[in-house]
Length: 236
Image (cartoon, rainbow, N blue to C red):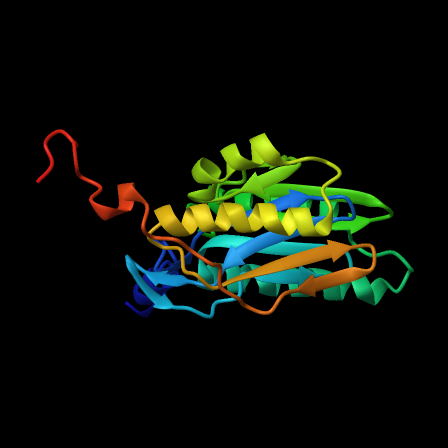
């Protein structure tokens, strides 16, 4: 009986997401990688938390951002802390770069998916090592790719078109921030889980900087916002 109960208890992990974060947007720019995320944590459709940090440093060269279940992201951070600690213990003058971290996370996510116990996140990994910029993504089932700009969640539908139109390889820091803010403002207008409190992280050869939380200027008097069902067939 005890064995039966314990095995049942062992399976009660995040089989379904409870507190989740929405989109992450990452781009390459002239000197490195920029990443943006808001700070909302949604309990179902209720925005329960408004100070959730979803951009974290990994070792010397990498930055990670996560959409999805917050507790699973905390578990992933534990894995990464162990990975970096083990790497540092070698003390051989080498350190893991963003490509190695990305490869490690694809194995972790795919392994958990095969156990039918996935980590319910979409991850964006970026960084700079030896002058090489790197930006990659991995989904909760281990699907991974690299690109010049990446967006998860609703951002994959609402921000990627803007990035395809306006992103350039030689963007300055100021231009990159302006582009990310445009994407985040678009999400704020259209994604119910987005909140107007965000952070932008920058990683270059010199290191990582994460901005203090701040809000964007918004405008809510667009005609389409005033009465969105006008002219809609079958509307109330």
